[in-house]
Image 1 (cartoon, rainbow, N blue to C red):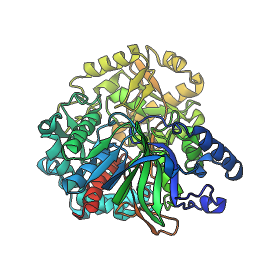
Image 2 (image 1 turned 120 degrees about the horizontal axis):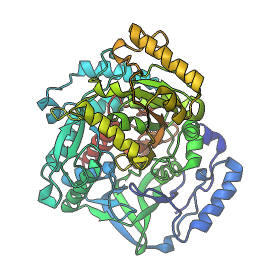
Image 3 (image 1 turned 180 degrees about the vertical axis):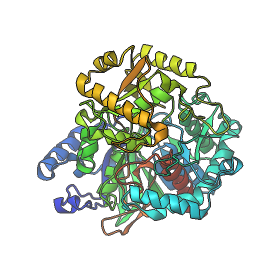
Amino acid sequence: MSTSNSMDRRSFLKGAFATGAVATAAATGAVALTGCAPEGKSDMASTGASEGAAKTGYTFEIAPETIAESDITSTVESDIVIIGAGFSGLCCALSAAENGASVTLLERSDHVTGRGGSIYAMNSKLTKEKGYECPVEEIAQRYKRMMGYHSYRVDGSKWMTHFHRSGEAMDWLIDHMTQASSVGGNDLTPVMEHWYGDPEDINGEFPGTHEFLDGPNGLGPDDNPQQDVCDNMAAYCADAGVDIRYNTTAEQLVKDGNKVTGVVAKGSDGYVLFNGTKGVVLATGDFGMDKEMLEKFIPWAAHQTEFGGIFDGSGHKMAYWAGAAVDKSETPTPMIFCFQWRSITRQVRAFQGLMVNADGKRYTNEDNVISHGALAFMGQKGHCAWAIWDDDYANEPQWQNHRYVDGPKVFETPDEVRAYWQETIDGPGTINMNGSGDIEVKMVKANTVEELVSQLGLPADETLATIERYNGYCEKGVDEEFGKRKELLLPVKNGPFYGIRCTPWFLTTTGGIRCTDHMEVMDENNEIIEGLYCLGSMVGDMYCNCYSTHFPGHNLGGTCLTFGYLTGRQLAGAE
């Protein structure tokens, strides 16, 4: 075995990476929240990276030294090796095993972890039951708009694969989740989330977002139902004979010529070589914890948002050192939301009342989805904005939506809304959104507008003038500044008054690995690297500019569920 320990800077800047006979990486996995160098190798790896950084600028560009063959204690053979036991890796493992393949699933943590719960799929049996079947002509119109949002720098064939096969994949998941007690899991109830419908047909969401409730972690919309889904999937994998290796850290991809044949991983018994005769699948999550990778690929997100991603990008690095290229657009995409808005409506949606910046001025038409709405204030001073509303906002029926199709309203009465606001005001000053971390939420309440502006720390004269001007638009029914539709021109004049500072939450990154619509990893010449596949948040050219929430849960439903399900079937020979 041999390795390549440096990269050509010119090629790297083009988005290509050097190829080695054995590609090496730091610890990798799909559920750990932080990454570190492998035990016993940190000095060697950091030294090599430091020397390389002086030449190339980024430490992650340099592959660590190869693990010696003499250090490998045993070899495990299987048809498929999957690195990372998150939702995408679990879907791939179960799908492959059910179709006759032998599967080894490596996970560096001691358990599986799921986050969130919104999974988008079209034409599943649940969407059809609820009356939301979508013909190809309709989806073509929706996707045409989405291609524009992503500047047409995405892979349309991947999007259409999701459309054509996501219903099948979701039906497969529903069948498993509703009968999970048969393998020692929890039977879950599939529901459809409600969505924001824009009468202007510009910034609205589309129906098709599924959740699975009634498990121990998913009793309602404030919980983390995806943990229950992943726990059930792990139980099904074990029952199907998948060899799940917890506390096992993948460190080096092994190549024979240009073909990836396996991976060296470290567990309690030392280094083990895991060979995958039909393929090695990377399903290791995002690279948001690696600040250098953020600086290289999406510096604007690194500079303008608080917090960071979830994983350390070690799976990306293994792929790069094996010759993989970044997305064809060369711009992996962040998920950026504003979760303070959820504390106003108890729904993951944009706030459509009055928004002002640090100078006390309006800066946009507030009618938006949560992703684009958050991006709109990232360019403002301090990369934040303030939501301002009054007591009458509790009476507004337009956002007092149903959380689930055919489900109860989020709030039954305006007084429930006011009680929720008061609970937030009296709360600890943070919320935790579906396992995504603690987010600052400091809602304030005042008897006068002047008092509110003072509590928010905004410039009094300019902010009060903005509120007065905005109230005038509301009275006229015409937004002379930004043209917000009449129905959303809700004045700020009847106390008590409320406000909250809104910040962009960098949830995760999407993309980073160039691949075909069959998840085959490619090099800079768009040639397939035989034997290597990727799934989940690693899949390149699905999104560009920003991750849009017009299809809430599109990443979980597309790159994780649908592509995981199909890749498992493909590698098992069922496709």
